[in-house]
Image 1: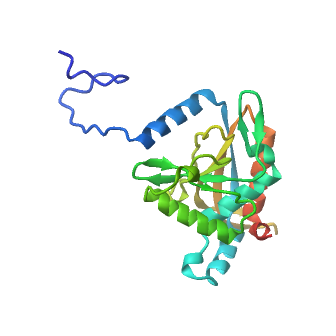
Image 2: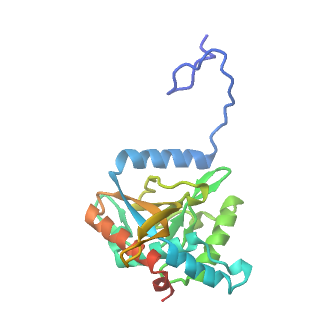
Length: 245
């Protein structure tokens, strides 16, 4: 009698173990299939960079002190906009792999990873490169809310040209993320940490520093190009007024 046999892929459970089996929902099945294929078939590599958030925090504070509550801007909104601007500066990162060609997109459709009770979903802020920061903020907030309520339309989460995964709000300093094919890149964003940095005057000061890690598909872009994209992203984060023009 093999009625107590362990599920396929698992060794026998310890005798007397107590457990609950939760059947996979459709979203979890799709996530498992796509990310397993990505990690197995896509040649990932990873580059990390620190970004000083002091100027961004000051600008955000000024904006949010002068707008209505529903129009307030989050750090993640700045990140999405900075990603989009950097993708226009370095379009090789805004590409997708196909068997016979690499497709480079004209606009930045930024997918943002949102955790829901049914699994991870990635609603898309379309054409984030041509939208204002306030438009990006409004759209991101609305999409994330409907994602958590499981009310997204398929076209609102299928596609995208680049993904952002932000775990900073959970106290995570640094992590690496799995690319969402056929996209070529995903940016993993950690939370701000207090660092002592040079003040440019021969002394030192305390600064808020965010570590980001770019996972890239080596078939699409080489390390030097990924580094170029990260430097463009860093420029917009550290000089956030450039995102307003």
